[in-house]
Length: 128
Image (cartoon, rainbow, N blue to C red):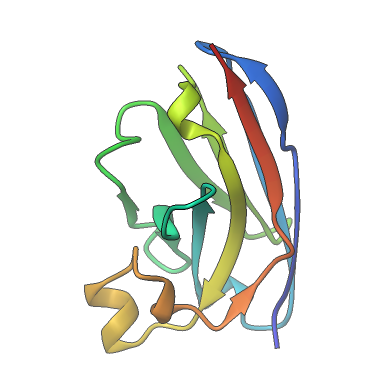
């Protein structure tokens, strides 16, 4: 079992920055894939960024490449999403997710179905 608690959401003007944190509990956290997903009203959930616990390999959605950075601190059982140059279209409900290494997660790390555990989420609002 992995439990996830997000923090760091809020409101910011376009061009600003926010850092989301996801605190995880569970013995196998350090070996898991960790991901950030978002869902805006009326839109499907989108994989934003992921990081694998053993290799620290990262994946990003094209829409956030060069602006967002995912990182993890296994000693603190925490994964971060640094979001810079925020745009109004980044407005969404952001959730942290965790999942073990599987064929699915290794091939499709940005797919929500690759993850077993989800946090409660946090709102990010970017105004123009």
